[in-house]
Length: 546
Image 1 (tube, rainbow, N blue to C red):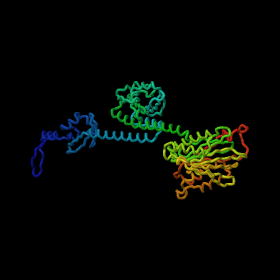
Image 2 (spheres, one colour):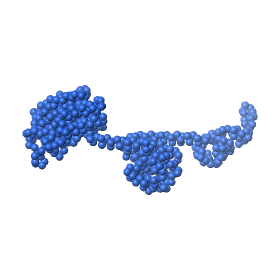
Image 3 (tube, rainbow, N blue to C red):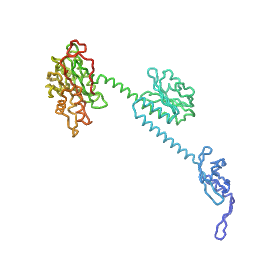
Image 4 (cartoon, rainbow, N blue to C red):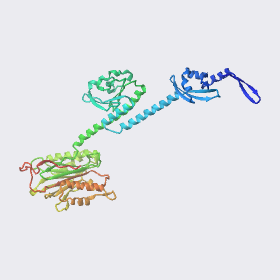
């Protein structure tokens, strides 16, 4: 291209060739410029900025001659964008721009967003369950989906063996266990299980991975702890078929492992608490009732909270301690609901059992229990209670001696459908020093029934306004419709009527215990002999309602 110097031809200004000045001007520009011939795309001039950006201009030949007005290429590790401008019919220029930093920033932002999305998904999925096995599987699934080609989750040794779970891309999850002594075969595993910092992946020899890991041929190995509550909850082993783990990969794996370890540790702690609660609840659950010489004993219990199988209401039956002894029944309601009430319930039941062993009468049981609660040193530990001593009488009848302490009196359903309230009364147990107990005796003819119940039944709120109590009148009416029904059916009917009344609303603990005299007057003994006690326990279990 030739330079021109300014000259006037009439009113038209023309340019006189000045090539040295043009080059100097282009070299002074900060933007990279390529001056090209349009007919053959020959590069006529490369300014200094372009020469610095693209030392080998010929490498751009394909992009420059593709016929497009823009291009983006990667050259010598840099991202270069070009834009074409037409100068005249015979010449055009390419303006080049280095987009490397821009592309790198975008890639870093995209990678950070992907990491954040992965960690958010991990937190959501890991926190969705308190089942330890499910947490282990979720950990392996997330690791294989985002971090590696294979993942193994290993728990700390228990009884000299460690449980592990493995997942490889395209395969199903496999579980197993390994002797504690073989853990040292995995590079860096014993250290992280012992609470020491993880060894960088670049220092681990992937070829040393033992066969029991089931990883096959791998190119890189990463072992990181699963931090738990004061001690590691386990370890996460990651493997890549090809390539290495970068520093960013290791950091992301450790952040993920911290979340997974917290979830696994929480699930393990929850399992321990559930197991402990199950052991403690075993002695607090309502007893399995038995049919005694034809006398029906049926209990029902509903805790105020669905998650709790125990609460403040309870019932119990104590077998005769010797031939000719009485069978003792008890149904009570301790103050409060939930675990606190359940603990007091257990103490009351054990106290009653101990008093039964010394053949204490129902009224005496209540007096001694009252003193025991008062001397415990704890305030607001009181209970309402009804205790009964049960024995067979002549002609198939059943005799009950009942005593109450601040509890609703039992009800008797006679054969003619009438409902009677047993005339017993007494002061609250554990509230005052001098307790007053007025026992009463009731006799059940064959087929007649006595119902012991807690106030959660009569105080159940529902009905049209959802605030009315079920009340004693409705209970009497409901019980009168159960004339002639077995004890099981009677308890179930009352329970259903109360449930319908509440319509799923909030409730207190509800307990019922029904005693029904045998319909037949003649005793039916399995051994065909004569019973030496007022109640010989039959081995046939009676269904417990709960």
